[in-house]
Image 1 (cartoon, helix red, strand yellow):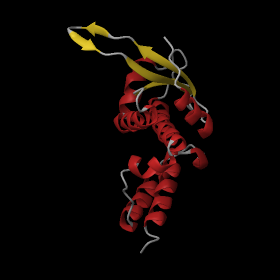
Image 2 (cartoon, rainbow, N blue to C red):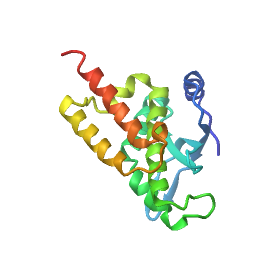
Image 3 (cartoon, one colour):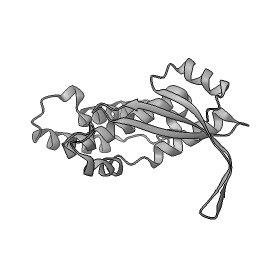
Image 4 (cartoon, rainbow, N blue to C red):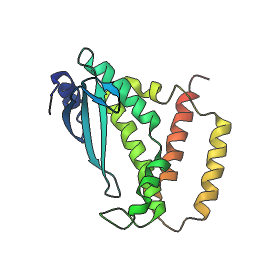
Length: 184
């Protein structure tokens, strides 16, 4: 059952998100001896870089749709584990569009993690610090990250650095370090 919330539609439209979405309502019910109240949620749908049809449900309260939605979105992001997500797809490798390569599954799951983070930032730009928990990377940590990058890249045979998750993460760390050290 669809239950559109105009406040959230306006938020999504103004943010210009490129995920498909629909509004849903779960009816009140009893399940396995537990009472489950009526719940409203947005079902998001997008394709990952490797072609996975990725779906996620984000619940919201009718009394505070934007606030509850953003909080539940952050909770979903913090609980999303790319390795666990990739592990769920391993048995389906090579079938129904699931990549054959375990490494591609892992890389794709990390890309999905970034897509979820970017969606939060698009919908609530002021939430960036809360999502990253206000942590900045020190110069020493950046040096360790750069050393790790050099070690990893020495084994790479891909020659696609601009699309490499390691390169993207190092660039993010570098920018975060610069932003965090401007005050010093």
